[in-house]
Amino acid sequence: MALFAWSLQPVSYNFAIQQSDGTLVDATESTAGARPVFGSSSHILPLVRVVNAVAEPFKRWLIPLDVEAMTRMAVDMIGHDDDFGDPDFGDLADWEAFARLVQVADERCHLFGRFVMKQTFISILATNLKIQKLLKENPEIEREVIDRPVILAAFTRTGATFLYQVLADIYKDELTPTYSYEIFGGPLELSDPPQRIENAEAALSGLGALNPPMKLLHEWISAEEPEDEPGWYLHSLTGLVVPFQLPSEWHHARIYEPASQERNLRLWETLNKIRQWQAGKKQRFLLKAPEHLFGLPQLVQDHPDASIITVSRDEKSWYPSSLVMTQLSQYMFVDAQVEDTIAFTDRLLCGQRRSLEVAHNGSYDLLPVRFGSYLFEQTFEVVERIANHANLTWDQDTQARANDVITKRLAWKNKAYYKIDEFGLSRAAISERLKTVCDHLPEPN
Image (tube, rainbow, N blue to C red; front, side, top):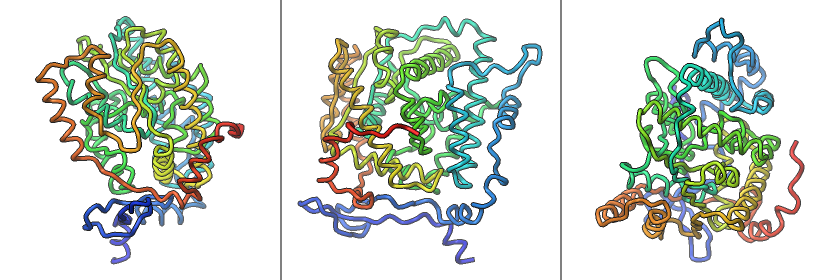
């Protein structure tokens, strides 16, 4: 009984204090200035790891990943009129990428990962079917107009999510953000009666119990908190979340292809048209995702009235953060390997570096924001610049509200240190790696 109780206890953090020379000294949680330390180690709940290990030989039998069976489940969720022939899942998803991702999951996922990915695959199918059904039954949705969106074309792990949430709080009467329940509960309500918010709360609670560092580092707070929309692009199969969860160089390289960028753009347009149609009123959407950065030329062409802000960060500070976040994420689905995490981070760095060069060397009317090693120090000034760029209100009342919002959100911030030596790297090695890493990326498998 005691062993079972232990297996339900989350893996405890190590705490440390950083010295003036950058080295970390072990500390207790109660020590002033102590922060949690994360590296390449798994923090998945011990019981889950035990079950994964015991079930490894039987995982395919216990949780089969059969596309035909999952498709039938999705159709049963949404419903289908046989008079219209085969179910229409549309072309907003890359179905070749879907089939290959199911194969990756079948080969790589442990038991718990198979369970989560099976639900994800069914959700991807059901969401695409629901979109096509809504469009067929309500052709007026296509006539909705996306008006002057404010878009953070944002490098991952740059502090852009914090900036996004600050903007959403300040401009709650002017802008419509995405919310956590529209990510964790799915971009569309698939249940009757509605269950998205409840599903999202359950997912967030489960994440906090199973893998506490993931929730802490991204600061997922509640289902009704503003949240950026990269999770939507699971439903196109050409978004960054796909290889972030499951190691697949093929899927990662696919993200940067023009066809994928066009598909992602059409997906967010369609989802926001549906949201606006369901709301029954015009909305000015606030969006944030790396996919907007990758697809910037097409985005500018299709939405010349968009207010676009690129967000990036000092690469030497960014690289360790991305390493640790990726490793912690992949443990949820596979037995994460350091070499996969490094390969992901290298390809991501180079893809986003090229995209930033395209953005900043072109004749685009955009606002560049670049944070340094210490994030959030100029948040108020950045918000003022965005307000001017996007033609948002910036009177005395708004400025006072901005100060209040930023102060409150900073009080929630969780800071951590990263043990990059567990990845076989040092800060000096990362600095050297950044100089040449994009010269020799391997061909994707």
